[in-house]
Image (cartoon, rainbow, N blue to C red):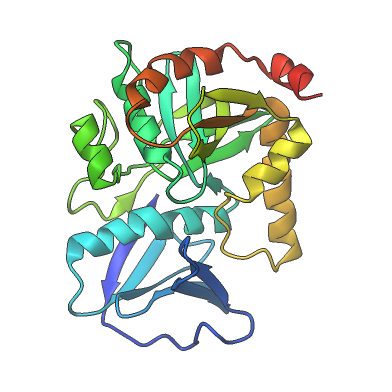
Length: 290
């Protein structure tokens, strides 16, 4: 469990252009935040919003927030951006992916910003009459337990673009583990097996949806591009991260999903996609990828 604590505002001791500072950008290349390690503390800095710091051994996350920032926005930043990095620093890996829990396991949709992860997860969850539900939104947590890799549920809120939210009618499916408005704790919840992970490749061309199985080595390289990582400068951290993703891709089908961009065929896609994905066993995926 990670708990958010509040402290007076303070200016970051380091700038984004200093040596040893990690910089995080949006899909347009604009700097949104930066981070650095100072002693045992890991710092994450959002200019004019807040600075957060945590260490690997302590469950406490401290926020030095600007006076003008809304408390709910600060808590959202904690859950959406800080918690994944804090978990990754503890050896629990997090993938930029949204996911759906089904009776056959959890199916994750990984991809870059704007690829449709959240929209597809909500659409697939709403499209079934069974117990499926949205499992996570842009923060797929997984961990190796012995020779198995499982996903772990964390509180979240689905964030959809306005047109997608209007099309789907709501922002999260039934039974989703949504954090409350004043929830300053992030607790690991239920653990489930992972049925498949799909990398989303939306296309501007019309055409049919195509599912392409990847080999474990190709899947490893693709998923690493979507991984949360505070830093890969430390060899021990880099090795732990690589080993975790290698074990994941060796045991779980990794697929690429190419589909037409836009909402006009979303319902049709969501209606059949899960069935087609769950038909692909790990053995079948490896055979198809050869």
